[in-house]
Length: 124
Image (cartoon, rainbow, N blue to C red; front, top):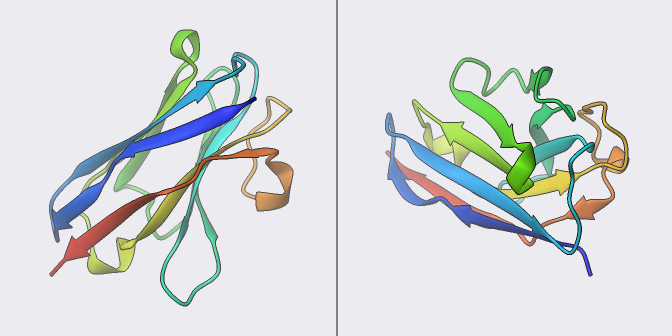
């Protein structure tokens, strides 16, 4: 069984930082693209950041560009999301996801595996 398990997040203050981590079990994601998505209360789930198989290509939503950084440790099949200069509008449940392919994507439908999500709440 393939599992993606997110950790980190919790409560943070506006202007502060936090870090999310996602670890894979059941298989490795050595050659797979990985991504982060989020869903705020009452809103659709949206793309946040993605990284390709090698870690050399990253994509970001405009709303987080310059504030969030996605990275991966291929050997450990983990993906990180460093979140800086947090805003209250960053409050959401954050999900990590994995593709079959190695090319990163901003589209949710391109991802085959999903974690359960972790809550990030940013207070003003």
